[in-house]
Image (cartoon, rainbow, N blue to C red):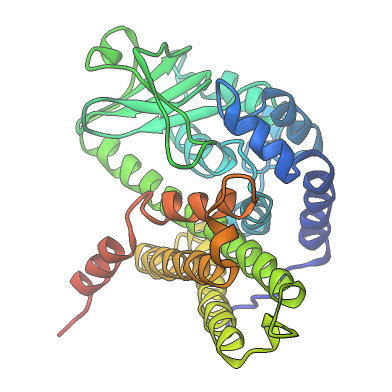
Length: 340
């Protein structure tokens, strides 16, 4: 039997991050980050390191907390709720666990870089097969997989810069020659297996962020509906508006426990973890996209404006819904695992 309840320390950690973001990651701060060269703030990342947030999954002997995905789940959800521009999910849920499972020989960059992540001094990025190779802007280490070999690229340099609809997801194009002067970390079947695990981690982490994004969109829209008056009444009193918001909330509340279940499966290496992750990602993607749609519809014309904060979370929902596999891809994966 699985207990989905979080313990007091996990909830307190979540509350500490919320208190931090309410002061240092306001909508104005998110806008400022989007306009910046990187799309995120190294100073805020350093502050997150001071809170212990960046080091949640880093081993204790390397300066981290040595915790798992269940402990990370609420923090990622809170990051989505705050619109946190920093690459917390990619670094803590994907790159750090990848490094932790790589061979610990003299050539391995794991110990050096995971310690730097825990201190808030480095962000890590990952990129899979396909050209161009694009990694998070400003990453100090990029972990690349070309289909056969995992490489570690220290201080990656951009050939060109690409902007996403989500302003915090600025990407550096490293070009086709990126792996030529890098450290080979792992080859062959072990590399492919490890990369697939990293992809599962990425899908799960993104689903946790999407739950937070959807929650914030629903909260913003509910608040607006209580304040916006038409025909002498708050539009939130209209049955059609209530139904739209209720539909979005129900979709979110069905997705949230799936995300928590997948986190448990990852921590305990459940043989069916992949199935649980696909369930979580498809549900969370749908919940965030629906929340964005309802939010835009209820807000009306003001929701289309750059000056209004709504678009910061809508764009994040749209961008992340397709990251690490969209809902359709994950449903197809689930269908392939069904015994007929």
